[in-house]
Image 1 (cartoon, rainbow, N blue to C red):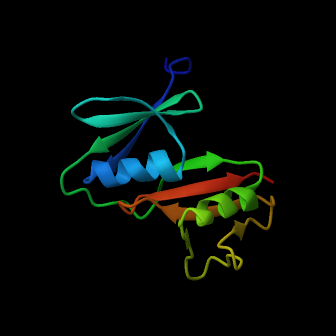
Image 2: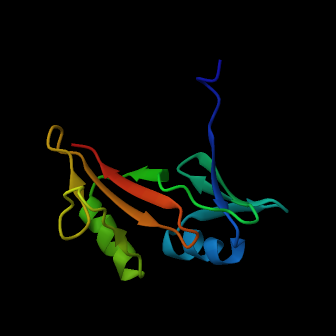
Image 3: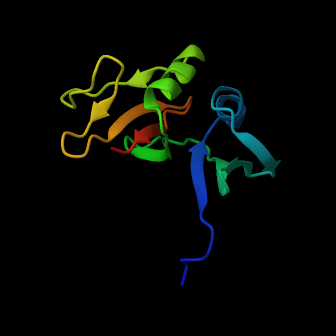
Length: 125
């Protein structure tokens, strides 16, 4: 039923101005519109709505991620803009914050937006 319908992604934020700056200036996403409820972005053809929610409390789990071909290069670009990678106790991440799946070689790194939403980068093995 929904296999041919494009998805819409939602990321929640209490402070849209601060979070807008992160998604626009730091991540470099292209804004496609704004309404009283959200700021819209193009995510490689998928609609992302950065949606205002008063009192938003972020989930500890990843809410949005990107498939990348060179995770180290993307990390360099993000850290140059002040983004810190998240390091989790017991995950076995390397010094840069990258976890590598021992079975597939897939590499994953996590970081947070200003609201504390957990975002990720994945380079598949």
